Image (cartoon, rainbow, N blue to C red; front, side, top):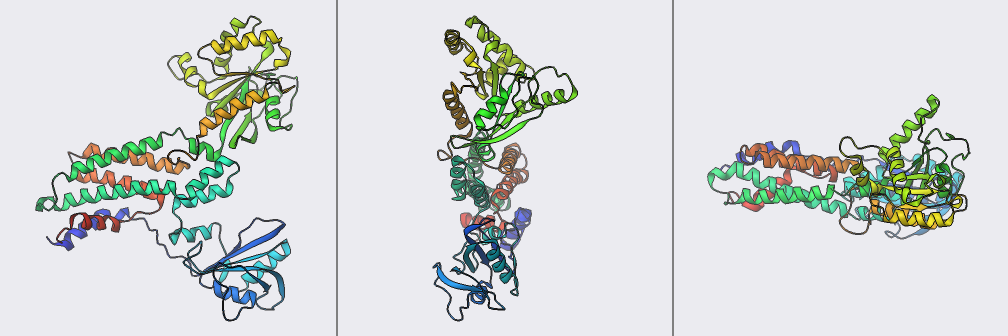
Length: 506
């Protein structure tokens, strides 16, 4: 076999698969304030690049030896040209590759007053070959140096922006590499499948490929497709946890929707008035419900608007309900039938007005399908006789096809604890437990690439018995999309597998 010709053909077939990941970073040394802006006790200024040791010497007066790696040293921090004292603080030295960016790095821990920070940054900027870092440049250099994968970089960003306990747990798990390892495993298996198919195409006629290779590929591709589809079928729990659960308050005018918003926010976020149609636009508030992020939206009362502004508010309200992860349907308890047995029928009719109707099919089936995304809030329960309320609760518990109902008084807060417990349980179900099971999808771009990977693997099955080159192209496309998630895939890795697994030509 002419190995040069065969190898060249494989390289040509895989050339467009390569995604450059070893881009050379700028030779510049960069610096930036790494701690938060504003007055604080301590501010951290980070420096990274080949001139970091020079920067450290010029800013601290160190002439010979640098501080021991990763050891804090108290020093006078001075202007590199005038030698004027700027501050006294801690300095740390991180020689590459054992640093966040993989380059030589240094940190200055100074007092957090604006004047001190400005003076230190100006001093750094006056040094030759040193410039302010661009947004995200430290993390980008860490990625190019192989310190972080692309999913780990995204996890780091999510961790920095995490506002609730569950978001912190999910982001930390992703930053630790669990999601990246899952995708990298799929990528490795796809590379192996592709290498075997390419080798079969190039060398099968010379009888250098053992029998059953393609059958093994068939099984591997089928298993991979099943695993990816299962990963995609998570009902967007990870994305909800990352972005916040969309909870919409909806119902008729004067049912107490704005009062419910204010009660949950514990502040007057929305105007409350006995005049129907007070709320015209969507009023939003971010909440932490049991450690899970919630974006709560109060909407206009659903009725036939009297003017164009109110009609627009109703249109927006219905649009939000259609997009909601969870809808809190608020009902004025005083409007319930005095005969409790009639309450389920009344509420079914109320829900048919508030909730969007399914496109085609049975409306009853549509409501049952969305009942796990709806909570009934029977507000103004303090105005209902206790006996009637108890009998109504009993009827609603025994009624089939209705979502859970909670009696609540926003005026007296009676029933608030029970309602919050139910709400927290629903939100937790929608987000899932970020610490259990396989790591969740957290980014819309991941989902898009994985969906395209599944479609590409379907192409393999479609052309497997008709055109093996087109079947291989399906595996190649799937690998490319996984590689765009992880940021790492190249043609050279495919060649390594070809020669390692088959020892072609020895």
